[in-house]
Image 1 (cartoon, rainbow, N blue to C red):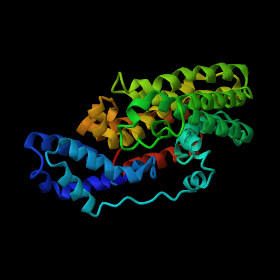
Image 2 (cartoon, rainbow, N blue to C red; image 1 turned 90 degrees about the vertical axis):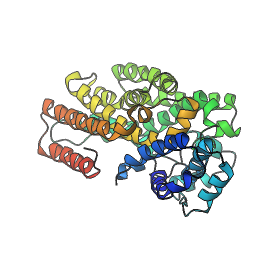
Image 3 (cartoon, rainbow, N blue to C red; image 1 turned 45 degrees about the vertical axis):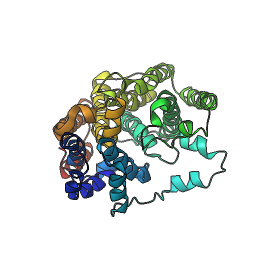
Image 4 (cartoon, rainbow, N blue to C red; image 1 turned 180 degrees about the horizontal axis):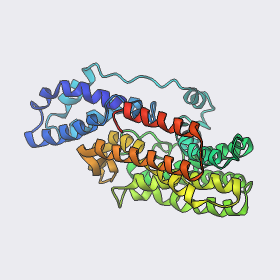
Length: 353
């Protein structure tokens, strides 16, 4: 991630810190930043949200150093004068939101339409499950894939609204989230609640296209959607709850095809998806570590500390094991294992597996 590259450049000027920060405080902030940098390696997986609030990351470093510094103005000025420059986001989704009517933009930002990667992360486990549930030699059901794609977009947006409603009190104190519509006042809590109701209604209409078993199974995931945002206040494992939420489609996709879950196949696939989420979201959480410590917010990034890469390797291994187990139990053929092998090679190339 770009912040981690900035951290690398900041470390080159570590000698600067000793002139402005007391030794114990200096050690504390450098340890946080080094731990963040240690996870970076050369991985493109760190770009989970490649364009998300890149322009705020420099402000995050300024704020973090100022918190520990006796000479905050000089520190901030030093960083501003350095060559750490964020790049502008120019994705199609971002341009689409920015070119929308001003009255609509806050609502599009509230559901993160300008950051569609979250919808893809929610959809992929659904797609895996639907594909594995297809008859031997047959392609996945295109109609089901379309339904789940639309559903993933809608429910990801609903989840973002719920998250922002829970976190409104702390988002304004975090550099990455301080510009969210509920924090800036562009949308009121009542307006967000009404918008959430519309999103959930659309989600229900999508869910009603499935069989009864899948309707009940899908509706039950709403408990996890509501609970996830509060987990960061009570446990260092909120990413585990996020994984359970985001990969529910690994169960739902199969049941949508067959009318029920084959748990011997679905559970290993679900577990693999959870480990995948723990992998990418732990990396993502490292950018907020300093703010999280200040606010008392918990995450696996803080839990693992400088042992993060060891844990990521474990999650990667468990993910691959789960994928292989699911394939064996459903008698997948060699193309499936070739694809799993490519995933393993990719993770190894990222120096994670």
